[in-house]
Image 1: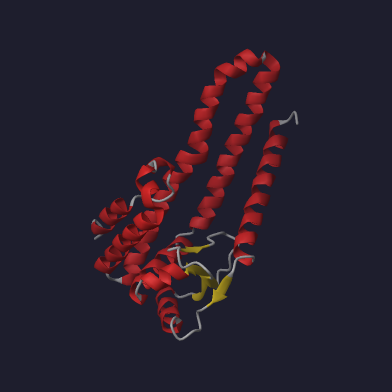
Image 2: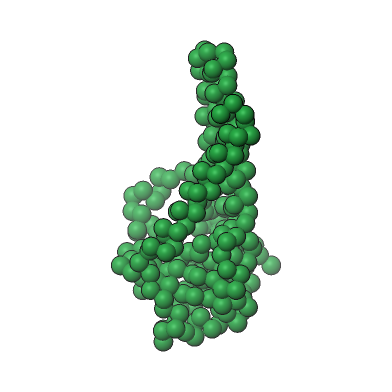
Length: 236
């Protein structure tokens, strides 16, 4: 493609298709069970719905006792009338209902703060910049030869790392703090939320074993638990 805007459109279309396929595969082909109307979770479901003024569907991922996690598919295409929240069996087994409620409020915070919309905008913005970088790098290579290409290659690599890892992860960390704040406001119990985060930290250390402390924080999508706890402590 000789036109930069055609190349950008092709790259953005490819990005959108990958995002949609990823969401469909994980959302509709996962091994999930609706537990919102079971005796164990019905009262919790109603409490959360009353607090957030939205219908909530609770799902558990089967055969996930060794995982401790909860998540939502925070996309602009999701229904505005209801929220599907997914939990692992490990979370249910290791946490009290009050602690699970704290975790679920956090996930709803991502929906209420419209993080899915922002993630979509950021993803397409990053994809556009990457497509332009690839297009003009190719132009330089074809127009001036490999010598010029080799000179700008390190700059391109640094730019790609910044666009694909550092910037999205930096924004993702900000979203996590916003979801934490929403959860604390809804929960009305800062100490319970901090207790839940500390428990998550201890479990994460065990589940990730020796690799837990070797991660580079700038590569992570979440702030460290200690930073999240400090952020919550500073909330008025």
